[in-house]
Length: 527
Image (cartoon, rainbow, N blue to C red; front, side, top):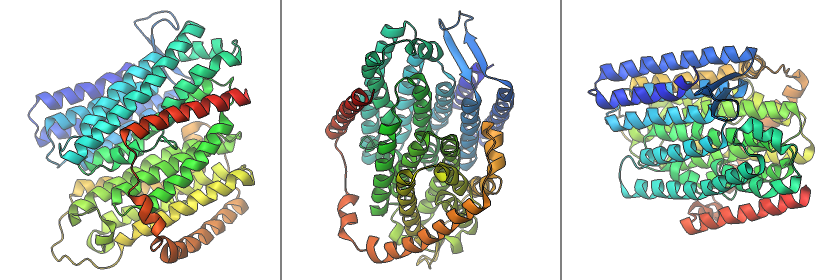
């Protein structure tokens, strides 16, 4: 039953590639994707009664390929199906080739397989194939910049995954199995010192997939490249980056004998602050959103590594929320930049006046990502900080202040008057898909407690006084953010200097090696 999530999208992609690409074929594909989302929702409901396990080939436990879906995996499957459904609706009237649709659905099948796989080596294969597919989609327009960005993405990720492969081999040598559940049981009986090298190898690779500092330079190239279709950028930033975070959660459980939370807590803080600074320096709309993703991943990492259930739950909910509002923002940016013929935020004005539905959806997504009360981001951020110490809450407040300033700058394109007198029409399917995501950002805040309990089977409650205090802090941050943007960010030469920061492939590889060395030393010191 679970293998259906891997095979069905690929079959749909093949049919779209073989059949004449007419609206009828795309309509059938959209209906099939909606059915896949319905099936994912059904699996999600079934997981409330326990994990679902499929042993491909009926081999004995830990001997063959095992597909396993628990509550977290079922949420990711449902989220994947929904985001791809939104992307399909968004692209419905776009004149993409059959090859584009084929790769899009193959990508979905690979992501589903990563979320279901319980085998360490199978994950390596799936991630590598997905890397190739994503690289092809990034280079889809075949212009020089897209080809360069796609090749850098491909090569850097291949280098990083070699660390993962060596780590997987070392785990097999130590435990005699590549099944994650069996490996976790065997690891609990081993001496901690024998785990230092494989843990550092695997977690270095996963850290690059999460775009943690300093392993982040590939992300703006991949997510913000000019030639990639907006739907691809939205899936990359809203969903694909979460596959790295998902693997981080899974392997953190496998290597629970080694406590790495302190190390990744610090890395998360650095990532969040640095991502916000780089986002502030940009004038390209897509690059602003891409660097903002790095900042939000940093915040998620902080929540995942605070030893408190509410912070962990808030972080996992923020993964879900980020997929919604960041997908909405990238899709809005794609529609707006196409309509205005530029990606320079300084040349885009009056979006709310010219395209009210797109503008309203953008506003709701912005209110979600900055943590405005009654929007989804406010609930997840409330729980991330609810039990955090001042040493943790301070950096989170700073990261969110940076996010607020970034989207004050981003919001400038919504207001004012555009010089052009001939507005380009935005497709209704695009507007409908963006607006649906925006509405969900609001619903996820109003029904935040119920959403967390429904999605993750965790009962939480928002303290009215605590939430009011967070709302006051948010209001103060907005006021401070406005003045910082107006009198400092917009004029300071520091942001102009870091705007052109770009690591070469050689330096990206060096950063991978440096991160591995630092992690190796950190684990050695703290075991």
